[in-house]
Image (tube, rainbow, N blue to C red):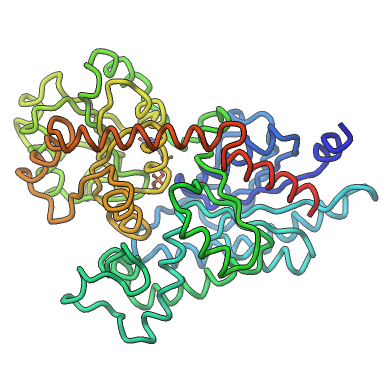
Length: 451
Ligand code: UDP
């Protein structure tokens, strides 16, 4: 009881990166730690800000960074990170300084939990002598792939030659050179990113939205490399029922459409909150879906098709060809969709949240990674966990049709669905009392309480 009361006074300041795939796990973590008795403050940017009324238990402190919107893509991601971190540092430092000044004599200093890409926070926590913990929002294997980069460059493996794209990266099995984030970003961009990521080592611990049984060897390597406690507590969205964390309105009406479909027949398609495709790819996807004869639920995010606002560029005759068999929406209640009995497959860009959400519901995947960590994740989904098929080449309707049918109708897909169901069960066991994530979360709570 004493510890519980004491924890309740302990303030945690959470600093998310203002992008959907980073906000989601940070808000989920906030909900988990609030349920453990901590008081939660979210220090966030004015733009892409979460809706405070969805989270009445949190205090929200918006800070101005001098720009009101930005959707980074590929190479300009680093420019975005750099401006964001530069502009966020002063307001956050002022905020934390004020918080410390207002504290009572007996109060413990606030503990700061920050997204690994909000690297300006490391400097602030050190100078204000505050405990700082990093939240990593992608898989552990991805961080190792980033850290491999300088060594590979020194050994002459980078920039990657076309002839070695399919070769395994020495010491990084099962990753091939084409799976490395270095392949989708330019060399300069990678160098800059490495310079920012090195700060992870200055935090006092790392929280991971992942599970031991999925990434045991990568987590062990990270533990060895950083020599600080590592807490794999995911899949966080399954630990507490958090309120909606969507920045866009969810079209819940699609669940009614799903209710009318048979079990495991629907392929759900979403490429996350950042990926953009062109009109030609849109055409190939459309006809691939039409020819597959499978029911589909397709999220086309407004602005995600180059040169159009929404679905104006859908090919002529497509709507008539699919009739009631397809449902196209702007933004889905994704976790609910993946948990729906009608959904039997997920065509994804392999963002880490989407992948964890799919695995946690036993839904096998079609992997169409685009950039950054997505190729690393796809490689693990396909070759290690064996719950996904690759769509790697230039999108072509015939290949799309065959891949969808392999996943949804053929024996190969059925076997993957079985393996995905096994992973779902293991994920549930890991968060149940006594499971590895359950234990890791309890250790994290004690770690924060004593830091
Ligand atoms: N998401 C959603 N509705 C959609 C598409 C995506 O709620 O229609 C959520 C999804 O559940 C996930 C997040 O947006 O939690 C996307 O994160 P992810 O890491 O998968 O990809 P990113 O958007 O960062 O590329």
